Amino acid sequence: MALVKCKECKKEVSNKAKLCPHCGVKNPAVGGKETLIGLVAMLTVAVMLMQCMGGSKEGGTDKADAAAKETPEQIAAKEAACRSDLQCWGDKHAIAAGIACAPAVEKLAKYSHKWTDGMMETKFPRFRWANKDHSAITYIGDKIQFQNGFGAMQNHLYQCDFDPLAKQVVGVRAVPGRL
Image 1 (cartoon, rainbow, N blue to C red):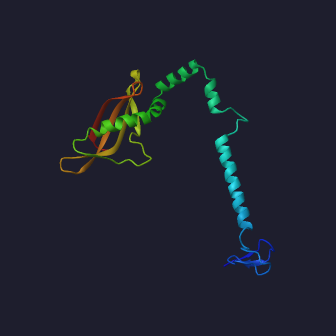
Image 2: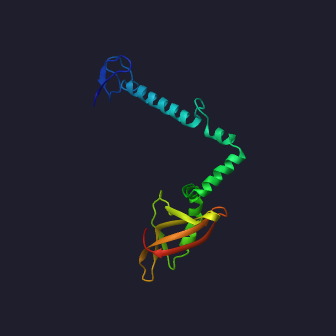
Image 3: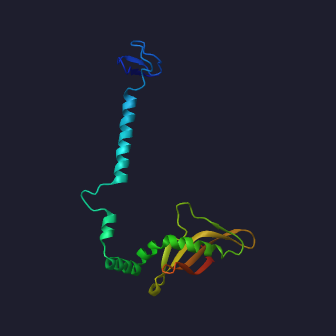
């Protein structure tokens, strides 16, 4: 039990009092400082949401506006530059490769398989050029276990050659081991 000021007469009352003993108002502890703090917190959250959702174009250009102003030649030049840079090209197609390569890797299991990656972890954390002239990338990982003939699960290192232009798997390999 704590003493708070009544919302009407501002005299001290119990925070659990149903009526103020001084002025008789109902729920004297409710509506004072707590309501004001809650209102300020809600207003702050609303302002932050409006800033995040609406955004302000003052003081700079919006990314969508900048992209709309690019000419087709500039877009083609950026794409060509990315295609020759392994990090850019590999990151750009990592999701598509993961979706296409995971079932292909699973099919390499003679018996059963079990992925050991976490919910927010990628199955293919590394990549390298498979064929730079054709922009193909080899995605590499070790987050799978294949069941052996004795029923035990064994860690495997796998590689998936992915052609981002055709969006298809070119080849897959797996060997026992870890990265």
